[in-house]
Length: 117
Length: 109
Image 1 (tube, rainbow over the protein chains, first blue to last red):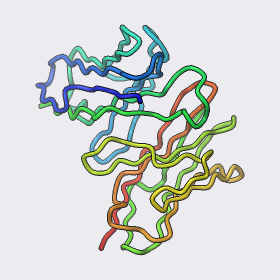
Image 2 (image 1 turned 180 degrees about the vertical axis):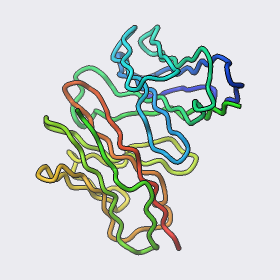
Image 3 (image 1 turned 120 degrees about the vertical axis):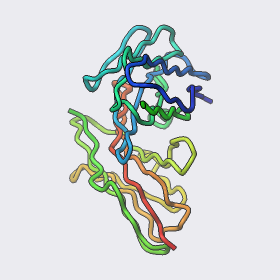
């Protein structure tokens, strides 16, 4: 079965510092990968998604960027964190290829709670 | 544009009462809809999908194409149903997924 390893689980960073969150996928190849943010009191907001190596689509303009250097690796970055970047970040995957409707099930990492101070 | 709307951020019911979590979608094609649930300190996980017409943990959801809705229902809520619920739309041809903002359900004793 598909698994996402996401780290770190918690992170406290000062304003203006860089950020790098990484998730890696096991159990499937060529997945679609997603970065979501869950801000306090709000639901999931799609930040970026990737359908393949080097292919990144951004849903909302912001202080963050994403990269996919390998098929099973998806990285969320920032050069300078803002206070408003605090939140819970979730990496998710959707099996790619020609899966059937019943196989199109998203799988999730454990998430990273980021606090910018 | 494809969109999933969950109008209620918070929903609170008493144990044993019926519960309905609303979800509306906007998609011109043939949608594939899901409900995902996140219990406290657990990963987000699939609850049910419309194509399976299944009932999981007493929950059911019917796709109403006329109203573009996929509401989640349970006739008798239990305290362990307290969680965050997300409605999601999968765009099959594009292999893409859109989530609603989520509804936090609290079932009170």
